[in-house]
Image 1: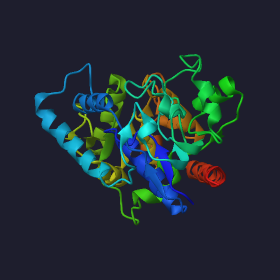
Image 2 (image 1 turned 45 degrees about the horizontal axis):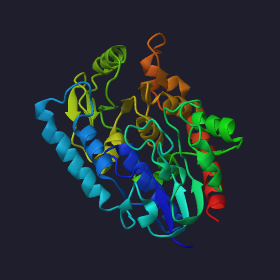
Image 3 (image 1 turned 90 degrees about the vertical axis):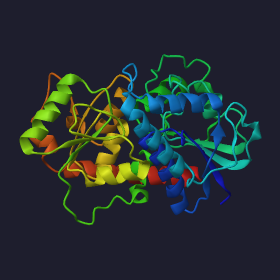
Image 4 (image 1 turned 90 degrees about the horizontal axis):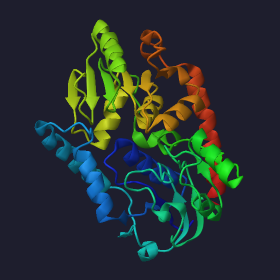
Length: 352
């Protein structure tokens, strides 16, 4: 099969973005498809990405002592980026400089989110200007974009795709309502190709810490997690970001360190989509809370895999022992297995 290109956000300083790109590229390779990540470059995007990586908690200022840690984290990401299968670089604003491909796969990640603070509004993610004979999407999403928001003239661009798949119910509804099409609902690449993460624990006992992944958690959620962990003698360890309510901070972890850290944790508390994804991959008990920007994708993921009871709200905090002190229900892994089969069928058909 000729070489395929993958168009996604593979250079974000974000564990989920890195791993979804890597898992899709390596997962396709395991299916016999030679795929490269399309190396789009933009000084504007780079400045925005690096600024956010150094000041991720805005409007809260980054403490002076944390800057070296965030810089070290960025350097680790750069080292990991260098090992990805990358195409020759081309300007994001002018894809005419890219190589020709028989097939380009757009996704995963929020490639169609026009509200994305720096990638939003680039028509290349809607297929414009790409040099290829055929376009498909895999696990694409509109993220926080609502079906009525700014989509006029944009959704129609997706009609040039021969196959469309999305990773959440929200994006599925947008495609159906705006284009009258029924997209396939598939798994995020990390859940679809978990073998690429080498996350197997080989039967070892989980470590005695609770992983905290995310930032800007509501106070009621912080208090509930602290009480539960303290009563059981588990330290809360925050990875990738400072959370002063956690007992320990590991800000400068790289992508591979993140994957190992989650796989070794006793349980996970998060408000990030991929915090939930990595919990599911490793069959970890987890508790999550919705945020404005990520509410669609977390709500839909947990609904899709039948893990809705792991989403906490202030007026309905269940017994945390039920969701954090016990193994995930077998029904969740059975549902993921079913979705994995569906996703494999979609890829086999779309890649022909």
